[in-house]
Image 1 (tube, rainbow, N blue to C red):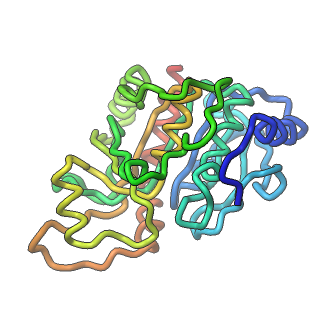
Image 2 (tube, rainbow, N blue to C red; image 1 turned 30 degrees about the vertical axis):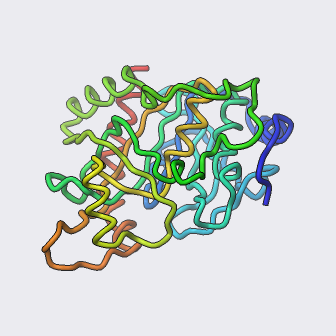
Image 3 (cartoon, rainbow, N blue to C red; image 1 turned 180 degrees about the horizontal axis):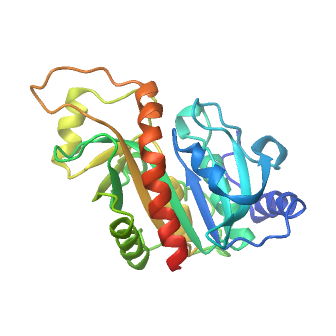
Length: 280
């Protein structure tokens, strides 16, 4: 399990991708649990299994197909990760974020990340879309920062600024797109945990206390690497379930319900993403 990668690893993966397509995508999308159908909207796309790309990690979680789709969406050349890998699958942070580095080598300038998340804000409902305004890097605070190790100076500085991880202009476009499509859009703070176990009641009380509106097991490492390399980021969480407040009737959280609510979230997310792409 590689702990670190060099520019040559990213170049090898990018070279394999370029052999399969003439497109030069400037926009990348990462699709989370249950959101794979969004990739079906890509026109004239070529699909490349992760297993056919050098150094790419292979997906092991249900709900993540594990293919790279390159084509056009709303006239824009896009590269879409149909499924992602997670730290809890046994991969290193370098492996989970390698696809973002490869996108940067391919020339991607804007990254749209989506995920399925548990709702912590009591005003949220299952099926809501939350625009990520900021994040809490709880997994990174515990030592699992994807930038640990030798700094890749050709991408960014040793100590990158994270005062605005999610691009303000892209967020404004997402709000406009949601309004035009009549899609209700929440906004809040996403917190990333390592997983794969879901949260205990005490975990949930703590996460609410520190200001999190939604919780998941991905996205933040990818965003940190994207920002380190100067890539703009738009983050969207699909609220798959509402986590119980203290004293509420206990309801078991399952991965199946995450995938089920994805069927509601996909058309909402697609409407917002299409609107953003049209406006870019």
